[in-house]
Length: 622
Image 1 (cartoon, rainbow, N blue to C red):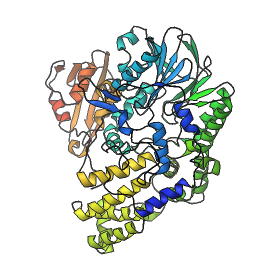
Image 2 (image 1 turned 45 degrees about the vertical axis):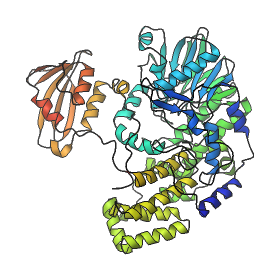
Image 3 (image 1 turned 90 degrees about the vertical axis):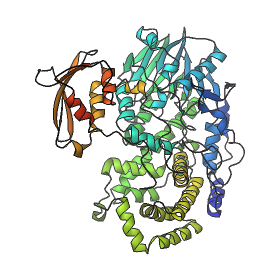
Image 4 (image 1 turned 60 degrees about the horizontal axis):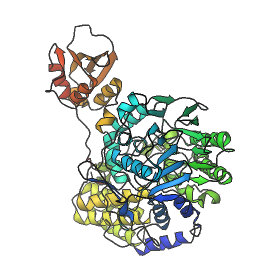
């Protein structure tokens, strides 16, 4: 929790913003309240051990006018997003909102209900399902649709569906092509680093309140329950593909490479309802999320929105998405989707225009201006993505990290660079003096730059840490973007209280269990400590008894290589199930379930050079 009040500079910024945006327009508040049926009796959702994994009441402070410690535009967005309960979108279509980062949708068919995007955790999904049934009756789930491959759209599935019912054909799991592969890869390959940074991004360690976490713009934060996954029964592969599920016709549109590498939109003619997944929400979205990801493509994003308008725009009477509240009325839908399309298209095209005139990503981010219509559209404001970091992402997508200036081709790494800067500026005391002057003048960006160098030279210097925390705090208070605020305040928290690690874990057992053998070997390969493995020359065969597949595995020059082929008998040979291989890769050498010929010394040598990720690596200090 922030410890200081907003400075005069931040208070003046907040006041100026109040006069520059259409705060008198309360259309979104009417839309966010429309169709409210009720909410949970107890806002605290608990796991089996009684631990709270979600508590909607922690955002009850979001009422009235914004305090000076919160950007008034972000305060407005957080008030909207914090609304929780079950809402009727149209008769037969309902949403549970405010019970996790994402929204869970219920579409009633002839005999039961189709569930779209069952949240992050099985506990929150079960609570949302219970709320729906309290108001709509105990309808059986006939299908689950995952709009895309991010964990907040599939993680809660086992909280509402028994996998045995899926296996028996009683429940369909419908996903866009490649969804499972992308979901597993994202949460495992770079999962440790992404998870650590996600703790900053969603303010996981921040107290909720006007000086702490107020929300992340797209949703308030992430739940902390158990994430799960059930393999799909149907993959959608083609735009125009149409299926009837529980008597409901569904027309699909593929949208890969947009907000997620595997994503799709779909239309329910019976309800004249169009689901836009996460590609047209009430915020500018991320082209490169601050937790880390592959850069998304705003050009194809814009094109798929155009295609959706052309394909469904004449028929849709309501648009709903995986976050936020719906948009009703054909005219308003076409306007909303058109502005969202123009937002991503404008950022893409103008960034390309300006980089071709020689500007760097950082320069474009400072200079680019949105058209007034987009600047004043609340749903185009940068609460989750921002114009600044999205423009830099576009530059990165086309040009890479290097801006072409040879002096920036081979700079010193941060600690070595900091040492030289601090010495050149006259030592730590002089840097601290300059930073305090910048702080007093309201130039918090420059103060943060100076203090970043100082703390990398003397990480235990109490005066530096205190001034740096105070500076990041003011940057957080001023941020319109929810994730920027969380990053700034999380940095301040660690400077004051120490490393808080990774509060949430995305590579949950149920997700890791869906690794293909190839993904599992890849996951092992990225943990090989190369220098320690330089002199090893290992070869062995692995047969996965439950899959009837065999692989020849080698470790040479610090590189793990696998090829699917039958064992020759020349090398040590392991026979085990895929699940036992997962446990072996995690270091379980002793328990039963492995048949071995030729000895396990080769496995001991391999396990001896594995170096798993560190979920508590430092971010704000060296």
